[in-house]
Image (tube, rainbow, N blue to C red; front, top):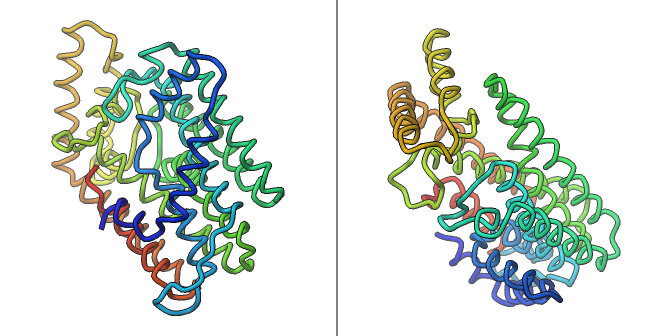
Length: 343
């Protein structure tokens, strides 16, 4: 099962999402239009809006496998659109913070235009998300996304703090990805539940499912950094170059001596920026290969996959209070996909 197949289960609401999403991105000035059109090409699999729409269907479907009912109103569509806009805005801002030249295998807006253009376009997407949400006239929905944006900023700052000293613990890592990734998944899910007037029990179930789904999603993305043979669009070693200690490295550290751990941290500190000389880039590549070998030897990838599988399982378990329907089954498929995707 892949995302495209899951989208086919909700054709009408997905079309409504796409229509509102693209219609909301009109701009008055040519440069803005040009950069918007370019950034749209970078749109990924749109897992967040898919999550929101599936939950809206599941929470209004009848308790059987036919999927009868499952109505999705305008507010639910707007929540899905806002989630994708906020996600895109954070990527545009992240590219500047991380000095990233590539995003999903193509030049970033930051590198192709300028850091200022990337920040301003991110602000534009955020403003359009706010305008989209205001139309729901629902304070609970607005609060979900307001809290998420706050979490995103706090998570980014915590990651910057931990990157500076290379002292990220497992608990730190979970706290960072909960803020930076899972919080927007949670906001998307909870707002969709509010949009269809779901009871509190269902709102909480939607939020819990999305939290574990978001953690799974980020864990898989972090594993990709140590999977150079996969065509993921992610530059191999990019997390190491940014000084980020993520799950595979934490797994390797868990079965290493203090001396081994300190040796690898010193190797990470010695890495130079992407703009370094060719000699420095060659040296970086050699160090990154050494760290990859260390992670493989210490079982860091296997460790990460075990934890990721547990998180995906917790996501599925959270759906137990939601009545059975074909939409709930697709939510299960989404959790399985996120836990096992290869791109």
